[in-house]
Image 1: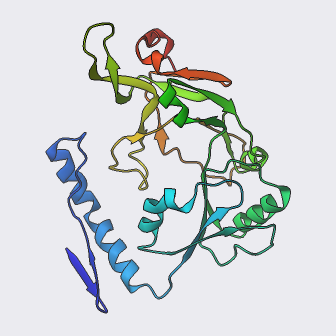
Image 2: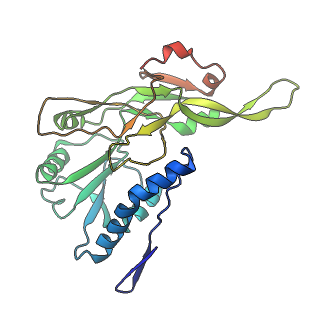
Image 3: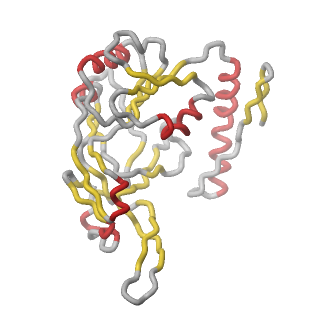
Length: 270
């Protein structure tokens, strides 16, 4: 469907196409999501206010070019900015939400205070970060190292009711990656092999954020605990592993040779 308002045209796709589901299930999900797709588009076009979102910089976050797909998707509905907090109180007050994507250096107490005050005054934050650093580029040479990397925001997230654990998930429900097999005089072949460090995460069907989504691929994923007993904090789990999972802790040597001889299934019991 094409929605036209004040000379602006926006296409609306009615058909969900989740390749892991049957045609009948895809049609059912499409019918369930029909009203939402229409209302979201009409509401966006008719809105008198264009809200702003900011990508936070200054802590080694992912550069703009590497989050271009996310930025373009958000730009359909919001004005998207980037910038450094710099410890300035109130600098975030005009933003409907902020995104902290892949920080690599610790947060100082001034920036933490600005973020905390922003949240306490009704702001929304999307944290995209991990406690274990894995250099995937080094895997091109056959192996890499996973290292613990605290960012001085653990106490703040704990207060908000979440703890990102410094451990890497291994899941038997995982991506198949192309590996070369064969040695000696035999010709090498490319075959798909399970790579347990790339789990296929299951979206929650009970939450509108993840309903009707396909499985989500993770890469060297950390896992989150909900913590604290504050009744005013409402926690919703959006992505889960399979029941055939285990965790490994840094420092950890990760080698492509692990794909040749994966651990016994009995050890994946989380």
